[in-house]
Structure formats: structure tokens, C-alpha cells
Length: 126
Image (cartoon, rainbow, N blue to C red; front, side, top):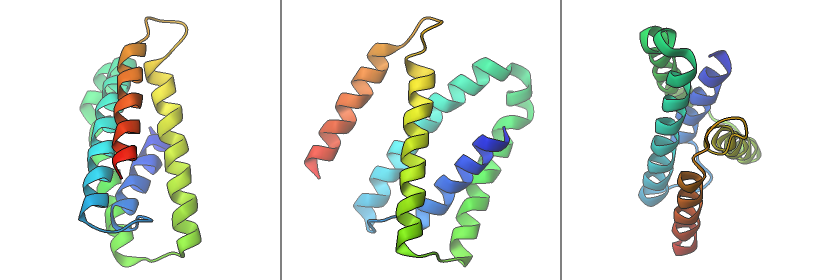
């Protein structure tokens, strides 16, 4: 749960410090991360059951808020923002691959494929 807490804190931080600023960028980032959190929440709930429902999800919510608050009082260089964004992007890809296309259990490949096509279409419109 600790690594997901840091991951969520990074999302909260990047809400304020993205590479591209503006309302449209914030909206796309918020929608993308919200949908990703839904998938992650489902996976963590499935893996950890009662412990996640009792405290885990609240720890992750607090981590997003903490990351946002840290972002409100700190500023890092543009190079650091690029590195943090790349790290977050890699984390999203790894989590999606872990949750959507697992080899040892029934996979949800079509959900993964639909999300990939939808996100590609969204990126092409920018």
C-alpha cells in the first residue's frame, strides 16, 4: 500500500505541476487519472478485500491530497516535472498491464484494447 500511496501522491502533485498547463490539460489529466484510479481501486479491492475497504482506500485518498498540498507549497524544475510525468506514465502502463492483461487469470483484454484505442484517439485530437 505504501508504493501506491507514493504513486497517488505523485498524481496529486502533478495536478498542479504538469508539463502543459491550462484548463484542457487539467481536464484530460483528471479524466485519465480518475479512470485509472477506478481500475486500480477494483484491482486493490479484489486483492486485499476488507483491509483495503477499511483503511487502504482512505490512505490512498489522503495521499492524493497530501501530494496536492506539497505541490501547492513547492516548485521543482521543468526537468524534474518531465521526469516525474514520465515516471507516472510508466507506472500507469505497468498497472494497466498488470490489471488488464494478466496471463494467469481471466484477462480483460477488450477493456484494455478499448481504453488504448480511446486514449490514442484522444491524443490524436490534440
